[in-house]
Length: 295
Image (cartoon, rainbow, N blue to C red):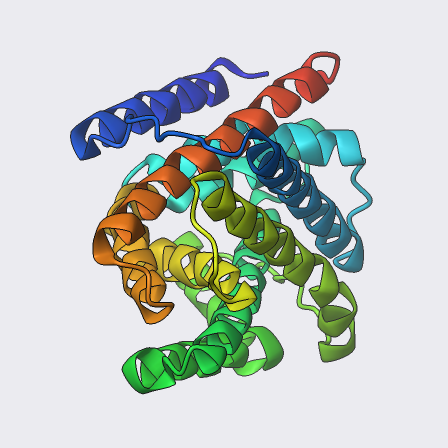
């Protein structure tokens, strides 16, 4: 692995530490049901493995045959890039890894990674809207989420913005780069993989709440997690969605008649819980990268 790529990994880890320290999110909540917590962890880890699989499939649909091991390495090693302000590295990181490994066009791979991110956000918002519907919360956030869904849908399912992206690349780089695009059929074929990641995390979040000793709420409470995550990711200023995600999550949980004190505890616990999953996929990425040589 090239040294500058290693430095970017170290920088992302530094920003992760700084962000968590400043936000004071390193408080460990009390787990009252270890079995529920184990269940939540299993679904959490499965969701992270699944995002690697979806990354592999979107590359295949774009005519890039990349091994699952390379996808694991690229995804895991760049997972903490979202804590770097601007969130460019979360899109560029895995693209850079594959580009250096296979000598493919970084511009094309970055565009595919961006498309992957947009589909991920779209799938998360869809589940979030479903959750709001069951909790009668569309009156509060309905217009915002529906507008975001529409905008993301235009980016994903039409060619207008695809052509616009190619023109922007040509303007800044001074050369024509053909950005791979997915047909609506191809996008719909891989969409279930993106949805499944959010489903795994939603179920895991549900069990996390149970592990904290709370019960008697609707199953739809789990769908608040994809809603909070997607809106947090879209908060460009906040590194990794720190603060933004928790704020949305507290608001969603109160719709389920959970008192704000408990809702705040759950929101903060979910940050550490999800960080545990990020550490998991980072370690998996390190192991996958061990015998993969970057040329």
